Image (cartoon, rainbow, N blue to C red):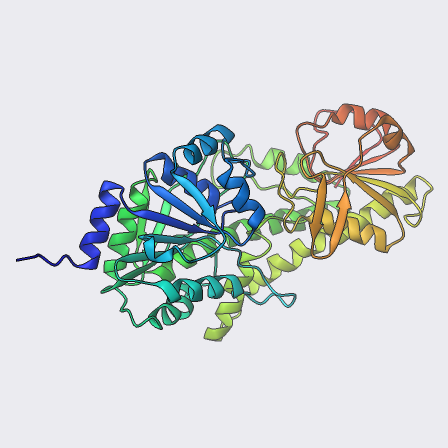
Length: 439
């Protein structure tokens, strides 16, 4: 008599013996490093991405993400452990499907879940018993259960009986050499205890430490809180910067001294604004969801307002600095050093430097930028290319603004050759010069 094995038992068995076929939808800063980690422990991984260019590069073993080692991806592809496709036709063959697609905001700061919903509909077309679907994209609490689950159940399959659903928010910090996908604690929340059990089993095979929480909604809240925490504290030091500017105090001196306290404080630093895929966006997901409960997140809203003001403040200060040197902003030649949103990274998503560039242009300045990490920038209709950082460029500029503190720039040379430098990142720390103005 043949024994019938239920879908959960069979899936857990495949996860345990690593015969489970893993699909990763969205092969970007989150998806590709995750796929590599899964393949390194022996799982076969299929990447799904709408970009034919990315898919072709993966299948040729060509890396395009800084946090992935070129040789590791090349070897895993050669071993047949990683491959990629642009379609969803292979979903029936997959045992686990991890979703790592963008969750942007509209112009009105409203969550835009078109990618999550679109991918979920594609998966629902092919869903079969014995599959785990896990969302890693950052979103508002309730997305997995309220948005994804109804779509998946249109397949006719039943949650925690036929298929399993979880949320495990990504915690990727691009460019961080210390904390990687493998050694960063992984929060996991399931839609029901059966889904939680399967998801924890899956992530435990790759991540050093998995942190289970009571629900997918709780996991979603964890992630937006983490990023909101950072946004609020960055806003605090940004507001302090505005006050120190009025009071003619060096905010960097104040912060450096404050952060010598060994308890009760954590270092955060100001800048020309906030960028990346998390800090400028994620708090607004929580802010938007809170309105459903007739709750106004005043603190979060205020932090967003302050952070969004920083590019404009940077340009206003640039105008003041130029004026003190007898030059109006209109017609001034301005060089921005750095277009990436953080140092030593090729990621310019939501970079405040882009907004600074546009505001300077709007006020009549002649603007160029240099960034060897991001030689070409194209976002939200803005397109620009990096220029070479020559002696002539620096000497002819009326103002140089350091917007990203990349370590491969010789800032002593920049200061020596430039008429005046506005440093928004304290990249000139330790350089004594009268022509440097700090944010």
